[in-house]
Image (cartoon, rainbow over all chains, first blue to last red; front, top):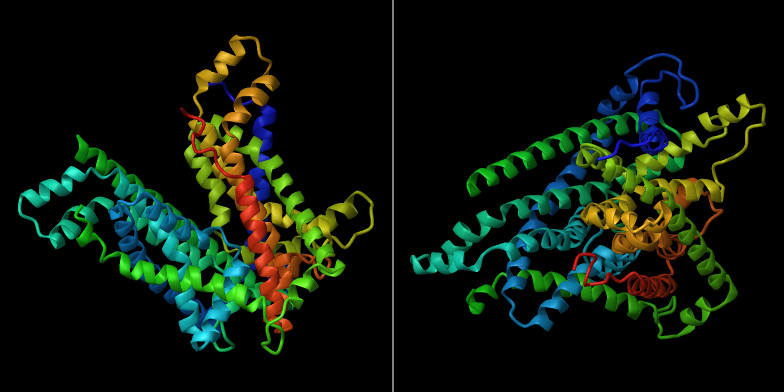
Length: 266
Length: 268
């Protein structure tokens, strides 16, 4: 492999700098005792203190996490079952139709999803708030889970199932002891993606959240519209730290399952 | 697999499809035919074809085009150079991390950076110019949007470049192609699927952005997304909002048709 030229390296460095600059900028000023993002007065943790002292903000944070975990779990169950069902369909046309329908919510613009869900919830009389936000997050996470689980199911050797049957396994045993363990990496990836989708979503939540309920994204939006507040900077510092931890954790889990699978195949 | 046993898992999934995929689309179509009092009308569609809405649609397309173009221009070389690095997976991971930081936070950062007293204007002053209002301009809007979309453009291009067989490049060079010809005739055509996927994930969201326009562009830029949000949540005119949404869905389908992946793929 040829080494990169100096110009190429400089370009990459520039891209990385631009990608990280805004985030580092936010975090840097989160320690600023002055009230703005323009001149740094002195180091302080008061804005972090403010985040933890603000009980409303803490409630919103807990809401966000609860919605993400719950919607991730429910979507993972529905999506995994859906993927197993789709694979079992022999009719090719039917299968492709389901797959196309599956992808509608992935490619649809958030605004359209949000607006259509708002109509839906109003029509069937779901009160806007926790329930509507949770249900919407489940709804837009299901197709991601399906897409993560499907490849695992497709690469699975069907003779595994036949063998299990021959050895006297019941339908239930086949599902819980053969299929599910085999596709578990896909299920985990699906759950993880559903989590990140839920944590990151703004537009859909913005449409279906009522007055009493808010998630972090929606809250940041209203705070940002009001102008600069270093509390938001402190939140971004926390979010960044957590994201990096999660990414590192995910990376290691991935490595371990990969090496474990390589061991198993030997 | 026995087909009878395997149908049961589909039930909750089919329920999901009917309630959250088919019903919402049907409802959007239905509401697009209603006026403010709930009477059937085609007035919303007629209104969409008036100069006000057509102009807005055009400008929304123009901005989405600019955003996609600049994202591609910056993302392609980045993806290309990334595939040449040692530990390329790690570097790709580092590109992806910023995309996991909440969108709102990143957008909020630019309120400070582009602000009248922000670092960019401080730099401008160092060079002896007067500070300018960068925020609330179309430049800042396009810049922030490109910033947000770049990782999503890099990933598919990186993947298709990574899949490409390097001996094809050697072959082209051996046959006397210049670096540019090799790129234009070999590399780019083989990675066109990645580019198309990248355009898909940039252009459609760029048409429907609304929080960036609100926070960064003030009311300078109105996209189809902003208009839908306005109609639904501010004007409470769900009929008109739905009509714009119908058009957005149509544009989305057209975009997907244009950027449809070649199912044969680069690798035979």
